[in-house]
Picture 1: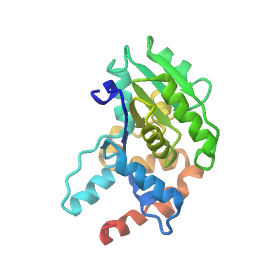
Picture 2: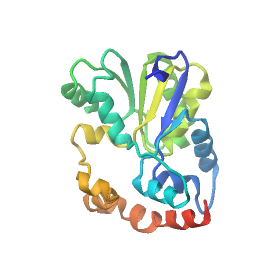
Picture 3: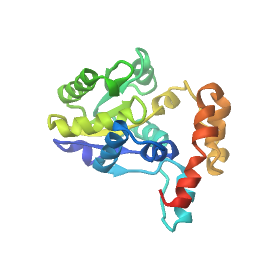
Length: 223
């Protein structure tokens, strides 16, 4: 909350397995460097994955897990956002209305950028201009990784923005009921990935069955 009161811009990232793999690809490119820069400049990095927590423990590192979806839901449900201006980057035309229905009294503004933000310098400039103009206390970047993190870095570098940015992934979709979280017992057993895979097999099978397992090789190699 203290970050949101400052007259400068900072942001929070929530690393998960997918993020670590994006940060350590088989073949790095320009977006890899931009993503790494974004992670380095984040004010806070909160572990979003119980699998990463277990792998870190294997290497003697203790990590507390703070799922980004839980954090976003808590901020809305606890009333932490009441009386504060919230800017949302991403989502569709009914997302704000759905949030206001669930959390009356919220002050929400939204910017809906086009697809392919990272390949569109003008779209990034428009987001930065929106964040600078709205002067919100919290900015929720809901355009996925690595887009959210790289755009958050652009807002920080611009020097014209304020508030604290949260790179929230699909958190709002969970809050308003468009997607369902895994049952608590599956989360405790680090099986949330399996629940998501069963829920959206066509979209996620490659991520969880082909790409994701490389995290274990990275852990062994110390990547």
